[in-house]
Structures are given as C-alpha cells and as structure tokens.
Length: 190
Image (cartoon, rainbow, N blue to C red):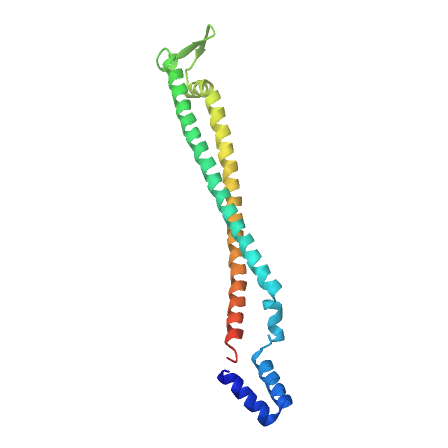
C-alpha cells in the first residue's frame, strides 16, 4: 500500500467512513471553481468557438480583399501600358499627317480624295491633325475610361480591405478579452 491509502485508512479508523466521505466531498467541491455568472456570456464554449470562426472568416475576407486589390492594380497596369502605346500612336499618326501638308505659311494645304483642303490657320491645321488621329484618339479615350473605372474599383477594393481589416481588429480584441478572462479565471484562487 502507498502512503495515501494508509493515511486514508487511519482517518476512517479515527473518524469513521461517513465523516471522511463528507470531508472528501467538501475538498472536492472546493477544488472545482465555478465560472462567475457575469463571464458566462463571453466565455461560453459557443462564444469562444464563434470567435474562432469569426477570426477565420475575417482572415478570409482580408485575404480576398487584398487579392482583389492586387488584381485590380495589375489590370490597371496593363491598361496604362496600352494607353501609353496608343498615345504614341496618336503622335505618330499626326506626324504622318503633317508630312502630307504642302505649301508654306497661309498657303498650306493637303490633297484628300482629289480635293484641295486649305490649312491656312491654326484651327484648320488642328482640325486636320485631330482628324488624322481620330481612331487612335478614340482608343485612347476608351482606355482612359477603362482606367477611370478601375480607379473606382480600386477605391472600392481599398474600402473593402480596410473594412475587413477593421473587422479582424474588432474580432481580435474580443479574442484577447476572452483569453485574458480565461487566464484570470485559471489563476484565481490557485
């Protein structure tokens, strides 16, 4: 027999089995600490599990929002590259058109479809320049519109990412509160 059993038998002999049983139950009840009622809503197993699920979900929101933001930036980069290429094409088309101009000063003109078109002032030369690059300008305008739409998407993606990040911070604060309360209760009365 071990020492504990010997002491228990000695106590039963001295005080009787009923008194030893009552004393053991009191000791057993004293070692089991109950959670104070005011902590139950925060520390119930369902609440702790809910917090963990919320953290996982908020992490997913943040990652997805970040990926959407990153993808939108990549889309914009491709469009900006196209826009730059098209702006160069506009300049090239206009340069080619200027090479068709004949004459000097107020006597400048171009021949189109057998007709002589006078370019005797800045407004006429500007109109000719724009007409020569109309398709390229249309494409640049279309790309600019797409880039502007992406800028709106970027703002929305940034807002979604910020919202997800704030949700994570709020849920993390709740998790820290639960952990602190559990640590407090674990150390209470020990």
